[in-house]
Image (cartoon, rainbow, N blue to C red; front, top):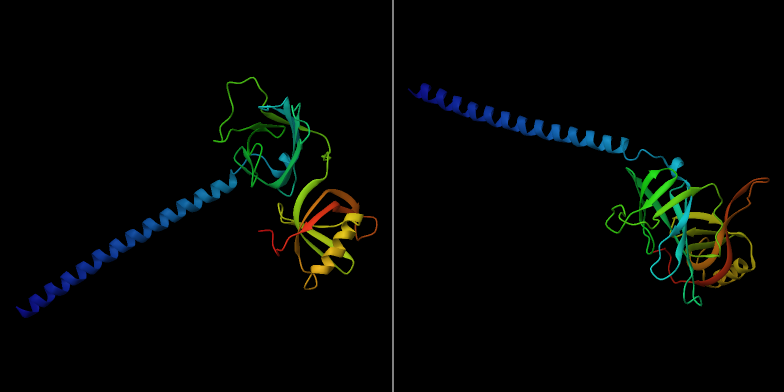
Amino acid sequence: MFLLYLSFETFSIMKKHTILSLALFAVLLSCQNAADKNKDKDSLAVTISSPFSVKDMSGVYTDTIPCADCAGIVTTLRLRKDSNFIMQQEYVGLKDSSGEHIFYQLGKWSLLDSTLKLNEITEGPRQFKVVNPGELNILDNEGSVITETKLNYTLHKKEMLFIPKKNIPVRGMFMYFADVARIKLCAWGKDFPVALTPASVKMETEYGKIQKADQQRILAEVEGRLEMRPGMEEGKKEETYVIYKFNKFLPADSCK
């Protein structure tokens, strides 16, 4: 009787362990299947993130879009191949023409499916529907296509160079060392050599008064533009930031 009871108890324990093992195996299998499905989704998302490439989209888009209190806003958007952008907006036909009427935005652009987004922008269109690499339809604040209107909300790609109508105000981390000046634009996180101009010479002098270490970066507010200038290598040109106006240094060692 004792042996029979012991065998029965052993059998019960083995049965419980078997059930627990099967349950654990089912849970693990379910988790693995879910992981595989998520992996497949992630792979699919990467594959079909957009039917358009950066090369397709890079270039200059421009047109006049509606304005509530002016004749129109001449909007020019340059999408760079490095996923950075410059947008110039000129308000034409303003009743009060005494103030500024040309504004600039710099930042990064991204593309998901057929929606192009301008990141970290404060004014102007933020999202576009890519009709094709030559047309961008401006989307409303909810990301929807603007319909039921005869007004133009489309920017068209033009074979043209982007030449700003005035110097562009920017913030950047400036550094001057061994007769070489460089600035890292905050909006892009990209570093450029600085051309020698009267404004940059003044900036270098002021920098020398406040720097505390060699190659220290100090936040600065300047106005200028990017131009192709002779580089360090003979016979080659490189994209250079030309400072036409130095405004001030700010007490910060980063863009934030």
